[in-house]
Image 1: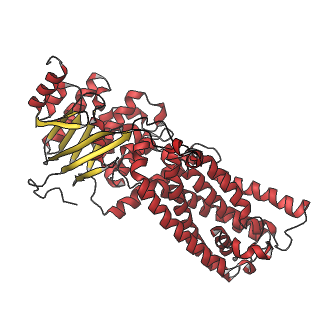
Image 2 (image 1 turned 120 degrees about the horizontal axis):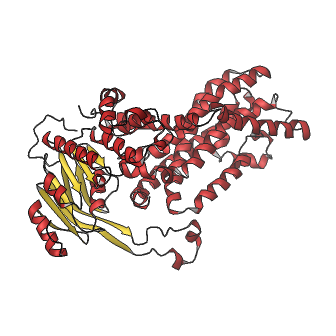
Image 3 (image 1 turned 90 degrees about the horizontal axis):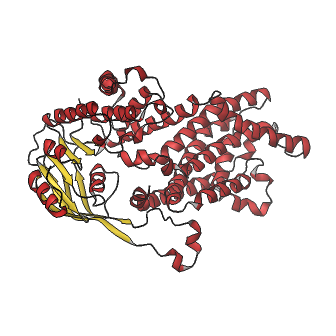
Length: 256
Length: 260
């Protein structure tokens, strides 16, 4: 892996080469074991579709990129591909630096364990050592504003608190790449503003940001570059203003 | 300060250990008797078989003390059985976590094998206790205990890697695995020794990889149970399972990630 301080301006941190991924149309229609032995017809695979195809782009360190598109056009899938939690069916995804994914952030938290244990566990699974977590522990708790609940089982937290602590942990990972998938839609206004400031802080610190959002204000606030996805294709890769203009033109939304 | 840069292997070990610890902590923090439960299950089973085979049927007298004979195979069986039945849910139970973190996916199987393996190691004092109470003398063959653990770990990981992804596609497999495990319990030398099988079955019984493994464990107290042919076959079969498991796992990984 490349050390942080090494100048790597010419080296893209994320590069996707002709990436495609397909899913089954009826994702929940599982095949059963007995289908293996059943008549041939029952074994035939249900239709598949390409969620993304022929997607090629690369990202330089420090860029802030907003992904735009209607629901179901592959935005979240793109983020998952970059995170590495799904693998492409064709093409290659190359990510040279560590990733802090704000995707399903509460996923790693265990209901029965206390907040403290959960913080150590989640941060640890994202690669932090015990010592590093201890060093940031107070900061994390303070950011999440749940100082009184450190030893409460996670399941007893309110849903807002759950998201807060999860955001606090992941955003303290300080990986060079930050992926954000609409998590900012939750939480109260004050906390949301705090999250925004945190993201700006990280951006100022030279992080690479990759954000999926339907909120134009957010996109304009953080991003310089935009990717417009439609029907599984990367339609436009340009400045965020151009991308939003095109998106609004295509789908007849009045500019905010 | 960003997450420490470490070699992939160190990271793998770190994550594996964290998840294993989490497993054990969750299990023990939510139940009052904690550790006792993981011991109680095999003890109750051993008690039942001991009663049936020595008190009711008046059999199993060749192996004295029979309770030690039982436990020395029953405890590793609990490891195998527990790990494989947990593996049927390896991906389904952790779907949320798998969707949000990029950890090498074999961890989801390995941590189950590891946490059940730790429980097995933790149950060994019980075996020792029973051996002392019933006056079973450990022989020199006890040195093969670690070898048995290694072979069993290889076998369990191999079968786990095979079962875990397939269950995602074929939910019925979960029940099929339970059924096969129950069959395997009686098809393996746990309540009996390999020598008690009809002689024409001896050769074939060796191809159950658990035969050789249990014969190794057992030789600690019952040297006549050691059957090197069975051990060699089980080591080979275990390696084949590991290879097959890795192959199937790699082939299906992409589809599993989409499915969960």
